[in-house]
Length: 243
Image (tube, rainbow, N blue to C red; front, side, top):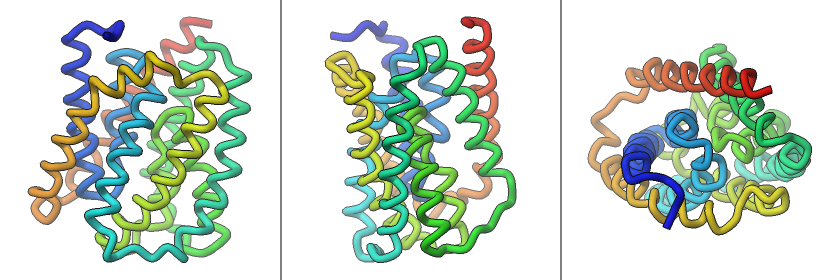
C-alpha cells in the first residue's frame, strides 16, 4: 500500500503516539516531538501525512475541551494564519526537494529556539496575528506550528490553552492542507501514509485522557526540545550535504 517497510510504519506510529499524547496533555506538541522523528524515519512522512493526522487530533481535542473555548480570542490568530498559508505555499513552490530538507531543518531549530527563548508576549490582537502567521507558515512546511502560538498562551490555564489552541490548529491545518495541495505536496501517497499512521494518533489521544492530570508537561519539556533540536540538526546536515 505504501513505499515504507513495516518497521518504519511501526516507528512512525510510535512517534505519533508520543506526540499525540503530549498534545492531549499540553495543548500542543505533536509537531514539535513527532515531526523531527518522522523526518528521520522517512522524509515522506512530513509534512502532509503529519498535517492530516494533526487535523484529526485537533478535532478530538476540541471536542474534549469545548467547554473552555473562547473563540473571540482565536479569531486574530486565524486571520494571521491566512498570511502564513500564502507565504508557505509560495515557499514550497520555489524550493526543490533538496532545498526542502534544508528549510525543514532551519525551521525546526527556529521552533526550538522560540520555545527556550523565555519570551512572554501578551495575549493581544497584534501578537495573535503575528503568532498565527508564523505558526501556520511553520506548520505547513514542517508540521511544527506549536511554538509561535504557544508563546502567547503560556500564561493561560490548561483547559483554555487546550481548547483555544485546538481551535486555531484546526483552522490552520486546513490552511496548510490548501497550501500543500496547491504546491503538489499532498497526493495519493500522502493519503496512504496518513491511513497507516493514524492508529498511533488514536492511541496517543486516548492515553492522554488517562494522563492529562498526572503528568507534568514542564518536566518533559527539556527532553522534547532536546529531541527536536537533535533531529532538526540532522535534517539541516542532510540538507547541506545534498546541495
